Amino acid sequence: MIGSGAGGGIAAQTLAESGRSVLVVERGGLPRRRDLLTDHLRTPRSGSGLFPHSGPGPEAEKREVMLGDGSWRDVLAGEGLWSNNAMTLGGGTRMYGAQAWRFGPKDLAMASTYGVPEGSSLADWPITYDELEPFYTRVEQMLGVSGGPSTDPWEGARSEQLPMGPLSRSPLGSLLAAAAERLGLGTQPVPLLINTRRRGGRAACLRCAQCVGFDCPVGARAGSHNTTLPSALETGNATLLGDAQASRIDVGPDGRARSVELVGERDGRLWHRTVRADLVVLAAGAIESARLLLDSATDQHPAGLGNAADQVGRHLQGHAYGGASALSAERVVDLRGPGVDISTADFRHGNEGIIGGGILADEFVPTPSSTQRYLRETGLVAADAPVGSPEMERAMLRLGKVVGPVQEVTSADSRVQVNRSRRDRFGRAIVRLSGSLHREDLRGRDLLSSRAADWLAEAGAVDVRPMSPMRLPTPPSGGQHQAGTCRMGTDPATSVVGPDGRLWEHPNIVVADGSTHVTNGGANPVLTIYANALRIAEGIVGVA
Image 1 (cartoon, rainbow, N blue to C red):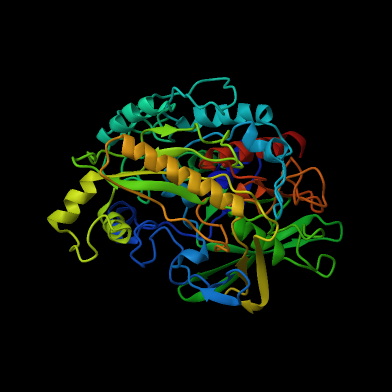
Image 2 (image 1 turned 120 degrees about the vertical axis):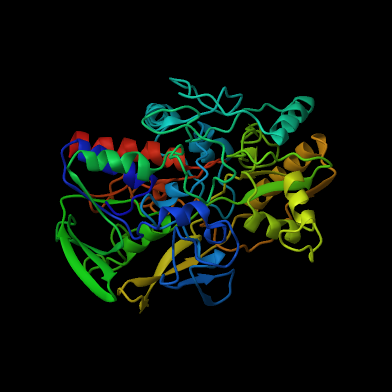
């Protein structure tokens, strides 16, 4: 199992509980928990320029990025263009905001719903919502999702309601609820993988003044590190190896994987091991999963494993965000976490002239290091306002933000490649990222920004700032919600894996992360990663 995040954790649990012997390999280590709890300057959202405790760190290799038709440029792991996910035990689920949205029926059938715009590779998923729904329900019940009831007009039928109700609303949430009613918008609590009561051996949320980007002090937020991975280890059939990377998958003449080469560093010295395997499951994230396949090229597979049709690494997508921010005349932030508590799903679809759309929700509790920089950048406070000043603190407590991810229209030219002429200290080929958002993505993003500004203004904000429009070409879209590089399908000419997650050319290599996503929805994708990985893993147990 390569990767210990959402997909890797739930697949590891499923396989270990079936009696298989599972080795989970995680590139990151386990930082000191007090650092993950208290260091505001080294979180993924701080914008401080310091490496986050959750990884990647200063030892991470460079990546090469091409902007538009320009030349390749080197970027460091601390730069946004590197497109990092957290690299630690539990992956991104260690620090994420835990928004647990389902994709709806239209999200899985975008091409059938809207057609395929010029310059896009938009396609339908090879599975339907009805096929995925039982796995959504089981993940919600197993890990614990709070929220509801839902007014989402684009959501599919549910076989069970969420197991926990929501937390109480913030002052901003209450203002937005009243404003939405006047605007005719449907609203619901944001579904969260956070306990609102003690459940599953984990405490209830204690409403601390920090959430996304930090570890949870009481374990109320469900992640692989405190749910699926412990369950896998409790079987006695799983072993967890941190600070290790898979550098190559070795395949035999029949195309079946035989072993995985692992590399790492200990006490300043590199080590190498070869581990024989009957099954290899990739769950390292869209960029690193594609990288491993491409970097495992052989004479028989010169373009990389699973890449005979030149599909590995293509259709890279993440989420462009639209939204708006504003200052209110009075305090609207009570500093009770998580902060994100109200949303509208009305704009996920049905927007005239727009392909797709997205949800809108208020933001997490503002933390000083990221929020004070944001206030300056948006002009909501003077650029010379001192950090920590009463002016800054008052602005933080009057700040309202409404944001949401837009359903991206995928492109085959947005991709992950490797530069085999350049290698990191472990001998792995350097990642190359290229491509841009599609023009339809920018239209959807601008729509969400406009609707967010309207909502804040109706809620009584006095200084509303929609996000600034973007221009093409944009940087490659591959940030925290990266997906799409090992696309699922029914045709080997246009996909990397079948509906069962197995590579067409290598039946005992399986992908169980967001790489399989054909499209990435107009909402956070983690619940879909969990559900699809559970579906794929149980398919392995049933037929392998």
